[in-house]
Image (cartoon, rainbow, N blue to C red; front, side, top):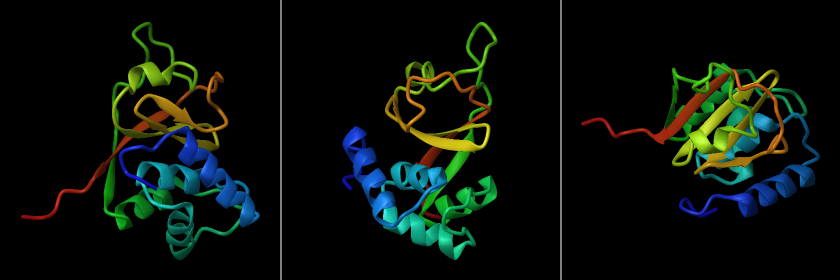
Length: 142
């Protein structure tokens, strides 16, 4: 997967990889793969090494550990509500997160937003986003 051109095509490829493995409940695996710009298999193995079971959801602490293990970090966005006070949804978040790699958590689900594109089955839906994290390459220690 090319690091600069993550988009719908890569999301479709990742879904295909998950299907070939017979995976489900793997939203965190897909989100990690997309935001860390690694193949689905790398994200899958990384999370498995951290204790994720196939077909089971992934706790947020495990997702964060996987992101760190892959050389990235996630920082929570503190201002995660729209100007009117309502929560963002997959339908509205693209306008807010136009640049960069992001993880968004809704109840019992996590998904990637890359340069304003929601890369998930929730695209265009109205699930209320509870938390937003920016995913960036970790800076090397000086």
